[in-house]
Amino acid sequence: MAVIHHTTVKPTKLELLTNWLPTRAWYAGTGAPALGKAGGFRLDDPAGEVGIEFMVVADTSGSAPVAYHVPLTYRGAPLDGAEDGLVGTVEHGVLGKRWVYDAAHDPVAVAELLALLQGRAQAQAQNETDVPDRSVVARYEGAAIGAGIGSLSAADDAEGTRVVVETADPAARVELRIHRVLGQRESVEGEAPQRHVTADWKPLEGGAGGRERFVEASVQGL
Image (cartoon, one colour):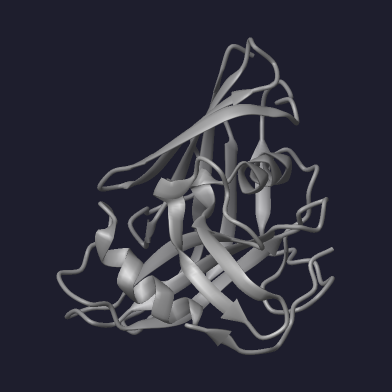
């Protein structure tokens, strides 16, 4: 169970993301973002070592606000082989120095996302300890995906992030599509097969907001 510490973080998560977001292929702005929180949820690392947060931030720097889905992990030491996924480091008032990663590059986060997708994990409230977030809904149709991860690779494009996961089952390969710019899909239902996670995010000025598909999955070999 992840414990939420209400303490100082320097730089703040929003300050860290202000520098990082413009480096992403899916960032829709043209300059420095002006960020505010717009929702999200957490997952628990069974080993209790890695913080996992699916954050939504709103950028109000342009002519209209844009919401971005930014899943992050927080670690007490660097993650070997994930240099491309490093967002930066922060000083946590209780836990000390933390390395912050784009969760698409973190095998612990990806494993828990697969568990959430299949109903083996429960989403947790973003800012409260041991409080389930039942507004997060996972739907999965098809054969079970093994719990172990052999390897993963993540790549950004203009639409979001594609994560290819080689599972412990040599016959199975999973592709996750992490949607980054929210408010672009007209519907979250009606597509087959049903393999996705939906969650709420706060309405922005102008009316965008509500429930949206955060992650979709396709499975080969099962």
